[in-house]
Length: 402
Image (cartoon, rainbow, N blue to C red; front, side):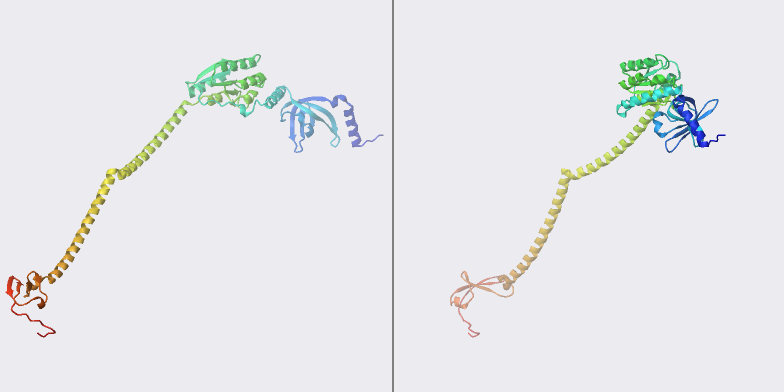
């Protein structure tokens, strides 16, 4: 009887898998379940179908073979090697590449084109053209029937019925769709519209695929007119969204962005007018106040005012001069009165009025008896007249003695 250890059995089975060429390069299709991204970078998951489950792992070093993030329920095709994990005694798929099945192939194509165009700089913000604030003509590239054009017309009419909408009825799905979209963009550029909306309603990735075509992306990028992409629903993203100058989540949202709201603009204008009116009135009041201030200054600085002021000043000077002259005259009169009194006290007439007499010989006054001799005729002046007298005697008084 041969007895084998668990390790020997697991090793034998692992060797069987290693020698099987098909197990070393195998594609396995299934639905993802129990997907876990480990902190080490490894991805652990299972692939299942209606009949069973197989454990899978993709090591961190193989992550370059995965172009998307795995999630529960995805249908994928995993390429790798099936081997035995000896510690657990179980076999599993060691994946080297994983791609989405069905829609996943389109998704991979989408990711590849997106990466290529991004590397070419077609998504760069410096190439984005500004969306005009008040377009007069808006071109629309979409199907002539469908929810997209109805929504755009409805929103545009409500917001501003004066904006002209020009529709290019393009194919947006199926054979010839990409060429039709490109032609619509080119023709609307020739018509020199102010803005172009390119889009359609929602759908599957196959339905929206025309907007993931490179020729459509290049037509949008080369457009001289700003382009708004409005493809599908808010969760849908296409290459056109990345290349366009602006992405709108839906066609209705594109119309909301593109067409200015007349009512809102009128309200803003009224608000601006009210602010301008208040500002103007405030400015007028301020200017009037300054004008009155300037008038006061001018009135004060006017020559007439200056002349009036100088005239008043001259009048004050004249009054002061008159007062000063009056005071000086009063002082002079007082001094003169003093001098008059002094002179009156020294006047011979004043002496005569007191009983004295004034004696003259001929025209000379007498101040000594030596000037008189007997026989001279003297004139004697009294208070009330003159007396002529002849000298009959002359006596000289010396030291009080005759």
